[in-house]
Amino acid sequence: MALPLRKRDRGMGLLGYYLKRLFTIFKGEVLVLPSRMVVFIFFLVLLLLPVVTQDPYVLRILILTSIFAILAASWDLLSGFTGQMNFGHALFFGVGAYTAALLNYHTHLPPWGSIPLGGLAAVLAGLIIGIPCLRLKGTYLALTTLAFPIILMGIVFAIPNITGGELGVSGLSRLSGSRLSDYYVSVVLMLVLCTVMWKITDSNTGIIFHAIREDELAVRSAGINTTRYKLLAFSLSGFFAGISGGLYAHFMRIAGPSTLEVSMSFTVVIWAIFGGIVTIYGPVGAVFILFPLLEFFRFWPEYRMLMFAVVILLILLYMPDGLLPWVRDKIETECPRCKIRNVATRKTCRICTAPLD
Image (cartoon, rainbow, N blue to C red):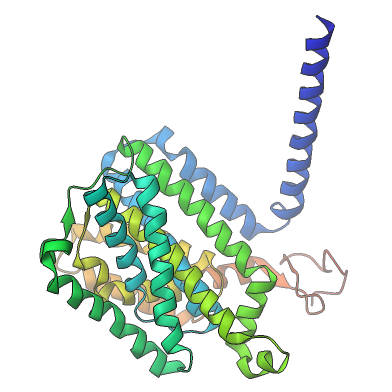
């Protein structure tokens, strides 16, 4: 009897050690800044929302919002951080959606297999776009990327026996067994993938992405292969956008030409700029504000788009850096010496103790 008790005590001690370590990380990384506390509370609310309501319409809106949040964040990873302006981001979304749909429809591959393969197909699409576009910048790059989803849409209409033409590929497997499980799959994947994107931008790779955006010539002068990093940005962005496309196809149970429309690409750009680019969390927050807001405006169909446009224009006029960076700058301040963010009420930096006047 003593041996099992000893093992149980050892297991409890190990659990206590990891819980204590987790709390230390939480205290040192989350509680130190109001913006991180807001993000944590936001994630917590999303996870606990079904306890309050399981209304199918509400869950549907939040599932689609989570899917589009991944798409918007993936655009920011490419265009926001590296400055490679992509006006054809719907290509990645559509490739992911159609790949997942065709694999599921023709080979009966379940969503857990077809969605990752859709993401990998979008990586290939990212390389196909990235290689010929490496020499282009600014307006020329934006217009070139805009052409690719239009070309793919033409291919979709040209082979209706495979792609379903205007009707698309329908009758796909459900994302999961119920609307509630669809919600948790979408929300958890959104949280995980957006966290991964944020960690990428916070790594050495993200620093190089940002440096390319600011001064590519200087990065080349430092001996860094900018071509490789720009291709990496296209591939990573394509993968995450492709995952969102696969999720969308299985949730809606159809992949159609609407996933490749130009309006989809421009909507993603609007979300990102509204929330604040070069942040990852900005586009995510913008989608969670604008997509449900657009649904709410359905009660006034005659003025729906007008009210939506007014909201966006007011934000862009008075908060040109985006809504979430504007809010963050009101509650936090950046140390002029070490560039670490601090609570706005602090007088000295929490890291280097420099004055925050």
